Length: 252
Image 1 (cartoon, rainbow, N blue to C red):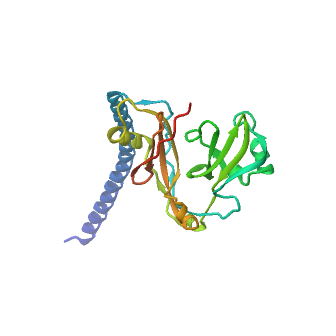
Image 2 (image 1 turned 90 degrees about the vertical axis):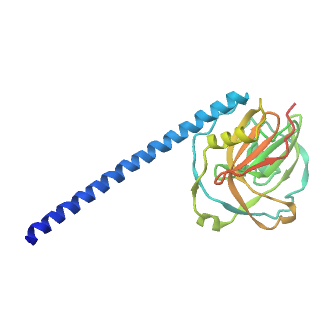
């Protein structure tokens, strides 16, 4: 046997096999990307079909992003006024929509850390501005600052505030499920015919109880879906678990 020739044939065959495997991996990569896009499109189309069939309407824009987020751990901050209603010595004028400097005015005159909150139109109602504490750009739906209003003036507030545990930074980031997937699940299994979806937003949600006020508690990336009738659904951003909340009174 010509071992030199056999060796050359073996090397050529080996290189050819590597090239073939490399090509298949390259094709597979692009097929996966294409399948992912097709799946997203299929979910959106399926959602439209279900909503039309059941008369479900959407008045809110559907977020397109599916960012990577992580579970966080938070701890209540013990403040002198935290958790109880505080009446201001003198009412402070505040217009949420017209005065961008109003938050700083309220912070300097009366309410600590107010710049750490953002307005929540879903849970606000007549005489009450509800605000959510922020973690980065995302709201903590359960950690609130309530501003009690009368004739355009703040006359009192109730505040909760938490700190994010530094160890949260070490937890793995995962991509959240899409808003379309969340809405399809709700439309299929939870919403009544004719329901109107008025808001969908990504934030953090956890089980916070007064009896655990000084405990360290987890909060998970969560999609909050609000209906026009005041119903609210929380959908866990990784597993898709659905939780219903107490109905928010409809605004007059």
